[in-house]
Image (cartoon, rainbow, N blue to C red; front, side):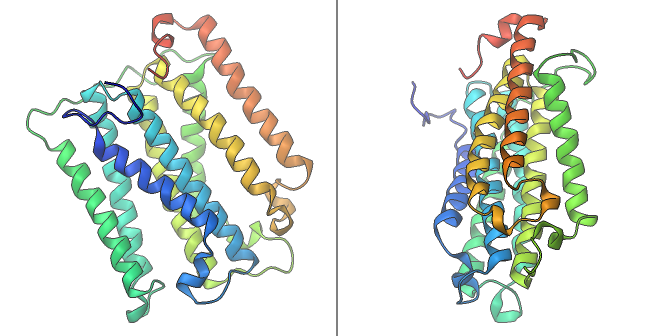
Length: 291
């Protein structure tokens, strides 16, 4: 059976649910003034920036997990591994919702929102846990040593992305002041600071998807991830363009710098794809990209 989602007995619907909830949440944040839901007033500059970055991050996470799920929908052992990564991500998401807190007891979210977010995250944890704990579950083995197969190809680029995402997670958590992102004159509010912390959790979720690709995917899966990153990067550039006036020069996303960075990113990804197809030791793996 074909289609976007194949709802049969082996369909990895748990991962599809995880992916779609992230993408829908991100798209919701693009069109809704979230501050009004939390505080009753419209977002100011720093909150607009953080909301947009959070929306992008949710779409990014959802896109990565969806493409990896669809690519491996007929490979139960890999789906189990990916479900385990998503389970860790969903657990981090649940814990972050706990720390958001119920507004009724000093937290940020209104009671109905907090209960909704708690139940959503808890359901994700439960359904993903049920997937990895099924009887006689197959678990994919690591493809091989990380250093094996490195060169001018997508695996090397995936390794680079994975390491950079890990460093980004650590840097955002402990070493970068969110106020550095804002242009002079714009303050970081308590709501913007909370959103920043949630963004860090989403970066961790992205790291887990990349780590899965690095450890358990062959050339076709690694190429698919690079292609997905190209698409998501183009989407992110368009979303960031409209809020450039709020960003500091330190971000390097103002004016033509945004398009230069976009061009370099896309060029590097395309170069890795082309070079990998010419030098890959398993050409057959590339033929199944996206299937």
